[in-house]
Image 1 (cartoon, rainbow, N blue to C red):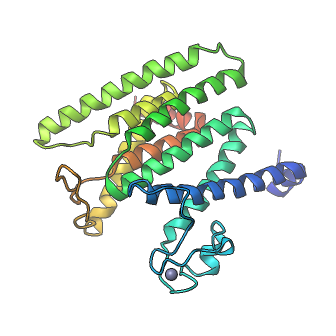
Image 2 (cartoon, helix red, strand yellow; image 1 turned 120 degrees about the horizontal axis):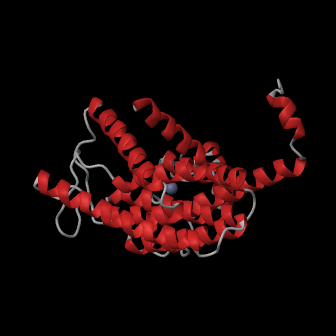
Length: 292
Ligand SMILES: [Zn+2]
């Protein structure tokens, strides 16, 4: 009783600190790469060639100007050569993915489970970024997430000594059920609204997330997505909306300020559950208990 934070920190072996710092640096470098994927894949460009360049003056960005998070602040968010502004989002994604890696290693330990969760989270960050920018969810990325989700279930069984096939099979069945459930909800909502109420990529993404997190995640992901999407929508409304998006899909559909990128909120909910897991479940059950 009464151990202070500094007491507890003093008990942390130096190598734990070393592992967490290394994990952060590794994660933020992956975040830097994910930025490139988010910007280049929708444009049909290669993610490896050419190297980073200023979108304004095309001057190649030197390695020392391309350090995750740090370089953005050193350059005060500007190109070194032409002073064109670089979005804070680059640095924010790098910081977020770095902290995400630390959070996952902190929760699961340095093992196959944290690695597969991190791969899944990285795919989800890309899906969320592209959905935010263009209201599109790439089916190939959703499929990659589903496969990584199955591998994560296998890692879970491996790390906990559970029967190898039981968890992955339940998760796969639940994922298919979740896909069908959200697809059905989307059809019903579209019937009532008299227009497409939900993008075609949202139900498969929900299915892939449930494969990753298991059957128990179905109500939680829906609940968190609904609450956070609604709060964000109300916040936008109170600020007068975002105006018309400058996006047009191949079929001529254009999102209005009533549309939210649902994939972004599905991913946010999924990452919260990856990090929070049982704590979120407990809070949820406590909340339900206060209602009945
Ligand atoms: Zn420039």
